Every structure is written in structure tokens, then in C-alpha cells.
Image (cartoon, rainbow, N blue to C red; front, side, top):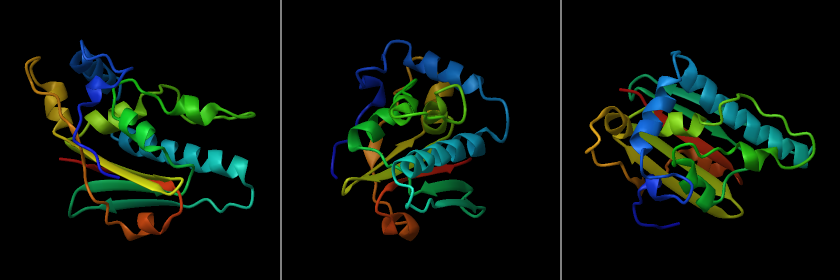
Length: 184
């Protein structure tokens, strides 16, 4: 899927005014070195659990990769996947994927804040996300988001830009999501 780079603060439910302060406050609510792992893995487990509830014959798969050379952390799941619109909105501050995953009988999700996607998007200076859903693949990355969040109010907000995902495990899946964060 092709698209032009976009400002996630322009999303209908993002609220451009105060966006930087909102992001900064969300980031300050995270205190542990384990938050990156917890948020990324919780989201993946929720996604595979949601798909399993709809199809008990489905075999959940979750891959966690830590690359010490690139200083990156990747989580890939073969869960429900996300539409291109949902992927794009996931980069907007305060957007929660929980509402979509909660639909249906007796859904339970891990975590409680509902802002994990904001933490993953803006807590680092390179975050990449790809998702496959109904035959469509969407990939976007946001760069220098942490620098922006910690910067001055005049700082230019980072854009989400397309990138080409090369991960063979992700590409082999029929549905699912990849989140990669580079720590610096």
C-alpha cells in the first residue's frame, strides 16, 4: 500500500494543540526499563488471543527478536492484524487499539492504560510498524519522535512515512502485526 508521509497529530481524534505536551505526559507515566517489552508483548498477546477466540483451530504465533547489533526490539504476531486506517491512527497520541479488540463476547485484554501505542511510537527515535489484514499490508515508520517529545514547543512534529518491511517471518504470515523499536 502506498501513501504520502503524514503527521499523526492531524488524525481526527489526536488533537494537534497540546499534542507534544500530551505525548510528553504519557511518556512520563512509564518508569521501568521493562515497559517496552511489556507494551509490545501485551499488544501481540491480545491480538493472537482475539484471533484465537474467533477461530479455535488457529495456531497462535509470536516472535520476539532482540538485535544487540542494531539495538532493536521486534515483536511479530499472527493475530488479528490491523486495517491500514487503524495502523495509521495507532501513531496518534492517546489512540487506543483496545476498543477494537474488546468487541465480541467476554474479551479481556492485558494492561490498563490504553496508551501503549503512543509509548511505542513516541518513546523512541525509530519505531516501525507493519500489519497484514484481509490481503493488504501496511508499513509505516516514525523517526525522531522522542527528540520531538522532549524538544521545544516549536519543534517540528515527526511524520509517519512508508517503508518496505523485509522480515521474512512477518512476510510469511497471512495476518498479523510487526512492531520494531530501535533504542538509542
